[in-house]
Structure formats: structure tokens, C-alpha cells
Length: 248
Image 1 (cartoon, rainbow, N blue to C red):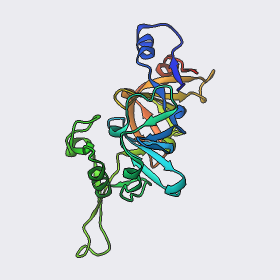
Image 2 (cartoon, helix red, strand yellow):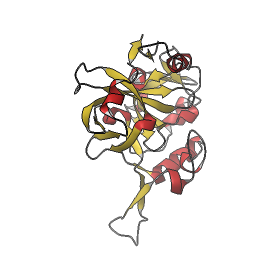
Image 3 (tube, rainbow, N blue to C red):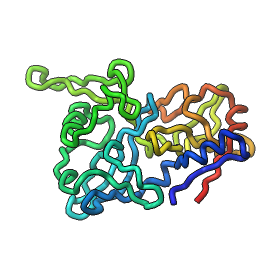
Image 4 (cartoon, rainbow, N blue to C red):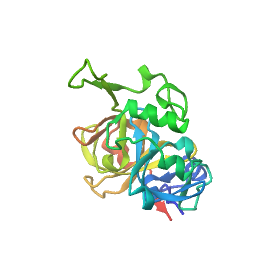
């Protein structure tokens, strides 16, 4: 069964979180991918949008006949019955995934490659739709253009710099107002909306350090270049946050 969580008391807010059956992302790493006609790989990572905290892709390492190829699968193809099975069932065949366009799974991901991938699988373009937290491209999904060596021959490559690796960001130093308090240990995922609702923070830098839940609304900035997450609350507020207690 995926790891769930509760808090240190029985407040209404904590009970509601339990009812929603939110799960921690680390417990989903290693889940199998079940296509409509057979299993084909395991989940190695999740790519999320650091502006909306929405999961955009499951990073899947396929095995066997796919020669350990890494592919990106949108939550749009994940069925909702994965619950306690240890698998993500997807509405794709092994042949569809086998013929999935090549895409460099290392970040940042080329927007042009994403467009080809989404067209191949008939996925909505999240950067121009409302699917799972999408929105107006100019407002919601920043991108950068990189000039090629010869602009006369090739168009500029556009990259989505808002996509982050859950695995890579885990371990980032956490700064509250006034100083560093610990590091990012895990994430809590709402499995209905595919959004990250809370960060699990290990307050190792504080006396009596513990793991607590901090809503993503309290994140002021995520600086991937410095491996740091900045919060808009004080260390005292973090210390008084709900304690993270995994439930197996």
C-alpha cells in the first residue's frame, strides 16, 4: 500500500487530508507501469511544474525489448485505479510507447520535443490548456530560447525551465525567514489532481529536529541553481507545523 500520512493531532484539517488519501511521492518511485497489453517498466522520477506544483510527467525506465529506454508519460494517460496495486495502469499500448518519439529526458526538456510527444499520444498541451493546472502560456509556463550555432539553418530551441525533477530537488536546503532550518525530504501528492500539496521538511538544523508538513503555498522561491528552497514563514511556524507520520 502506498505510504500515506497523518499529523500529530486529530484536527479537522488533518482528518480531511487522511480522507483524501494523499500519498508521498517517494513511495511511488519504483511503481510498475502497466500498459493495456502488458507491463513495460518502472517509475524512476516525477517532473513537476515549480509554478503550479503540478506533476507533468512520470519518468519511466522501460526494460526488456525497449532496451532500458527512458520515456515520459503524462498523467493524462494514467488511469485512476492504481490505488494499492503497486502499478500505474495507463491507457497506452506497449506499441504506442515503443513508437513514442525520442525525447531527451534530461532537464530542461525541449518544448519542441514536448509538442511532438503530446501530438503522438493525443495529449493536451498543458502549457496552453487548463488540464491539470495548465494555463495561458505567457502567464503560467515560462520558457527560454537558446540560439543555435547557425540561425539561418535552424530555429531557436525553446526550453521549459519550470519543469523540475522531484528526485533532484529532494535534499534541497530549506530556508525559513531568518535562516536555514533543514532540507526537503519528500512531497505529498494529491492523487486526484496530480498536484503537490505539501513538502515534507526534515528540520535537522533545529533542536529536536523532526519531519513536518509545510503547504507549498508557503514556498516563496525554489532556486535550483543553488539547491535551495525559500519559505515565507518563520522557523517557529515550521516547528509548529503538523508532524509527518508515514502510515504503511
